[in-house]
Amino acid sequence: MEKIVVSGGRPLSGSVKISGSKNASLPLMAASILSDAPLVLHNVPKLSDITLMAELLTHHGVQVSYDPATQVCALKANSITNITAQYDIVSKMRASIVVLGPLLARCGKATVSLPGGCAIGTRPVNMHIDGLRALGADVFIENGYIHAKAPKGGLVGTTIVLPFATVTGTENILMAAVLARGQTTIKNAAKEPEVCDLAACLVKMGAQIDGIGTDTLVISGCTRLAGASHSVIPDRIEAATYAVAGAITHGDITLKNVIFDDLLAFWDSLTRTGVVVEKTHTRSDSVVDVRVHVPGDIKGVDIMTEPYPGFPTDAQAQFMALMTICDDAAMITETVFENRFMHVSELCRMCANITVHKASALVRGVGQLVGATVMATDLRASVSLVLAGLAAKGDTTIQRVYHIDRGYERIEQKLQECGALIEREK
Ligand code: EPZ
Image (cartoon, rainbow, N blue to C red; front, side, top):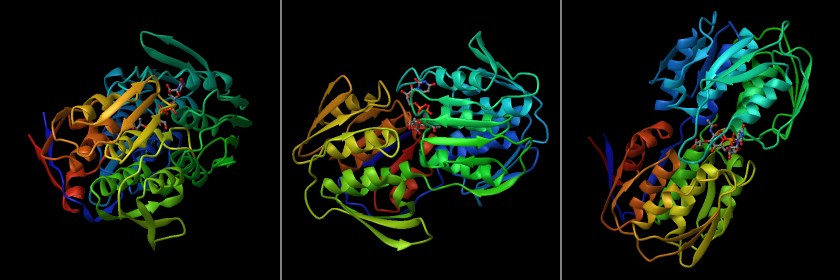
């Protein structure tokens, strides 16, 4: 089992290139199922989750090729030869659920393993299923699998009101609706940049989608989609993670390739701690470089996670790591997932002072974290331990590094290039 060892206490300086978004790439890859024409995705990060999605799609009969050097992923679903997404892959990556909508839309039926829960919560998919039923599908659960079947003639457009702005739920229903007959309106749709990136790519493939970026998506179904070429947006959560790396070490680093407006709530909270955040270079109309540096102390700032455009739940653990060394205190409230404080006990083993009451964690700043051997439980909890290790006195060993490799490309190399003492050990 690999582990990462961090020797803390060194301010980071230098620059980090932000990779393509994991959470945009995964549904974009699944969208290849919707068409028999080639879909070419650029800026796809080299991550184990991407490899797993490629494996799953290949299993369905999609031709997938990925070149790590160019980060281009070419997909072509000439024909779907298998409509079943097996438990052994889905259980490793919950995001596999996003093949359900496309399979149902393209083939009229789909059998997808229920993803099951994970460390951060039970993660039900009831809203996915209810949305597909609203489009006319007959869906039942048997032996841990979701069995879905479209009516004769295909799915039929309708109005769907989501009880919660579920990200992959919106993505599944959107991908089903683009090939449904008639118009579909999705109300209370998720507005995350990753959902918008998927919608933008579907439009390039010929889908008719209005309201992208709002909580109401209006889709006029069509009979077939063409191919497209699309560049995946930069990973905003990776950007937030490295911004905290610069802040927690009182360093001065520049993040390259950031869509600044994808993280406005995060930048607002970060700057209120006293960290200076400034755009230093414009690369395109929305992509900039961002410099993060710390002139003085880190103040405690309360945050509450919310669906986009609120503070992203995927950056909560990272922000908590920063708050452990603030000069006063911070209240961190997690409203999206029911159990996303798995990093708290491990941070406390590094001498952080955190008390959890239900959905809120009170973080009282301590003068100094102390390195320890810690265990990761999910992707973002894992990386928060690396961030704490960068600030801690002594060495921190993070075990179960496979969690980190799911969502962070070459993390130790990117941090080494900013002066961190961090190594991966077998
Ligand atoms: C996506 O997960 C992301 N994953 C998650 O990122 C992210 O944390 C989450 O959205 C919230 O932003 C991908 O995009 C691949 P949800 P998703 O459906 O779609 C409840 C990471 O670290 N819910 O928006 O699974 C659910 O239990 C990962 O990169 C239902 O109750 O999240 C949760 O409490 C972690 N029924 C809340 O909604 C449903 O049918 C938000 O879930 C669906 C969701």
